[in-house]
Amino acid sequence: MEKRIAFAGLMPHAPILVPGVGGDNLAKVEATARAMKTVARHALAARPESIVVISPHSPRRSGSFGIWRLARVRGSMSQFGSPQEGVDLPFDRKFADRLEVEAGLRGLKTWGITDEELDHGALVPLCYLASQGWDGPTVVVGLDYPDEGGLDELGQAIAATAAGLRRRTAVIASGDMSHRLVPAAPAGYDPEAHRFDEEFVGLLRRGEFGELRHINPILQERAAEDVMDPTRVALAASGLTAAGHHEVLSYEGPFGVGYCVAILFERGSAGAPRGAKAEEAARAVSRPEELPEVARCAAEACIRNGRSSPPWRAAGVLAQKGAVFVTVETDAGLLRGCVGAMVGRETDLVAETRRNAASAVLRDPRFAPVSADELAHLRYTVTLIGKREEVASAQQLDPAAYGVLVTARDGRSGVLLPALEGIDTAQEQLSVALRKAGIAPDEPFRIERFTATAYGEKPAGQKGGQGDDG
Image 1 (cartoon, rainbow, N blue to C red):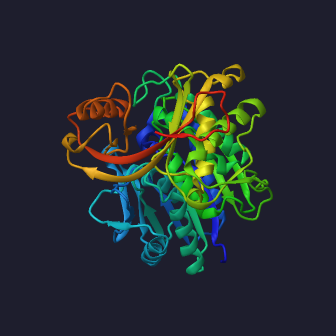
Image 2: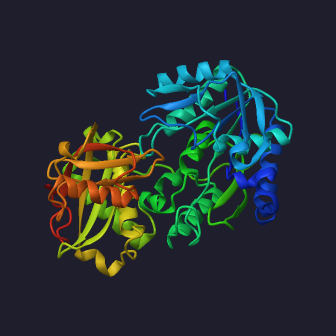
């Protein structure tokens, strides 16, 4: 397929970055504002015939991606005290129509956003693009809920649309980094939040885009970021291995929220992302009972060698994509780490286990990293997440049989696996999940229950044995 994505960039969306809103405070984010102008100039230098903006603040529906469908892409910063600042751009209806088709071909659902005010996640980047001369066809795309998946497929659908229409296209990911960098930050303070920003920016600088999905999801939650999903869509649209220029132009966080501005892909420049690695010869793993051994080998290789690529490859039922949690305990049964996600981020269940095992021993922010001396005294449990279904209340929960996922309207979420020690009632399970997510019991939230099957390793020291079905 002919590639038509000519440029991809990352721009933050804090209203304070717009001159009419920021006023004197704009001097405190001068580097960010200057970098945003640079991204806008580079985007327009790519001579796009359409621009697509991915906004995490557009209205959301579960399991579906929103596409703005307005007579014109129009909005102002009036709610932030600056009605004179805004955009009025032509809506690219042909691109939006084709994008719906391409998304559907990839198993994605879409819906039309028609009766809302254009959100600041789209407005702020568009204000900068318009200030540099953009007045062409524009599409704004929203996201589904966190961990519902489909991000790579959405990016591929955008690329396929651009190619199918033979239209040079620029893609802008709109996103802010951690919202919890200082005690006065908008979402409160978390002393570990800066670690997300450091890891994310470091991967962008090195061009290791494929590694973004390996960032610990617990750390993402603690950072309260909204940059990961739009960036993944933009990168998938441009192609992770496409030859092109990438560069982090600035990063700062003077108000407790991290702002990163970057060129993710610019066609025609030397230097390709370096994240792809050749597959190594590997032993086939086809039974779920073998996954604890995979987790152990991945963890030990990561700690001892700085790598998480043991010689395994997926086969049979494990060759499918899926959600996995890896739990690490001491011989005495004390929790030492647990990391997972409700949607698989790797190509198969073996790769997902390897990824989460490495994160569980090194990047669970609740614990210090596991040391080499501890390895002989740990055991691993791999939990495969089954079907999720929405329920109306706690009365439909059973902590012994089902895990629970709670999600607020703004995307905050908390998850508990089933059969946890100390969680005896449905109300206890729901309360703990809400507390983990930072959701107040009196605010609106969605409840989903899910099945899960745990495969546990025998006590540490019995490597290579079959796991017990937990």
